[in-house]
Length: 252
Image 1 (cartoon, rainbow, N blue to C red):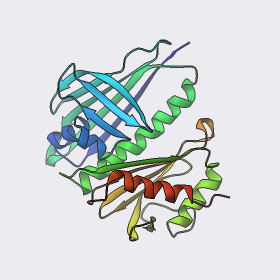
Image 2: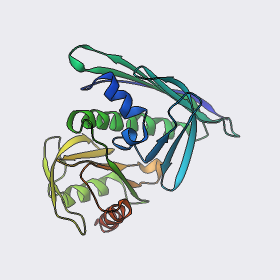
Image 3: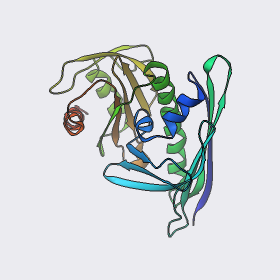
Image 4: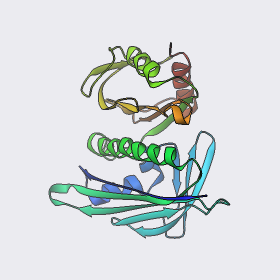
């Protein structure tokens, strides 16, 4: 039996409504802060496509008011589940914008775990959106997404991630770190997001790097959801390098 749900989030962003619209209603914009890879047909009735871990989800655009409102809805599945997402954009003084996001619909049997994961996930990605608009305005990123299923409990994962970044655990926002990925030169950055047991974010001069733990209820997977603004080699090569980094992470 399906369960109705609703998640509401609001954030003030350091950007104009036009910049926010480009970030939420275009494929390259979404690729610069959201999960996976996105495609958007820019019109009401058009299709959005989100590809993640080799799977593509589609939704129909049901609201298209450039600079004001964007909304889409997935088809209703056989079990009655679906998701609808709406963004409302409101300009403020001094070039800032308030973005209100509502995600609603019907979830399946494992609805409680999915619901909690969505709430935490939106906190991560909306804060990543703010970092994107503040530090990389007008640029677009290459998304890099890799995963290590069954990596371990949070108590195992985060000390290993911290050690790989050259710091001790626990770490806090503002901590300097160094990313060392096979086949590339070391990258210096700073922790810009830190939520215990859930996710860690690093910002460098050329990218936003996100490390995400799914939680025990969703298989203790460790995800990397990065957004690289510097020119990179072929995206597949970059993902292979990060997959190697992830697979070699020494988790006790």
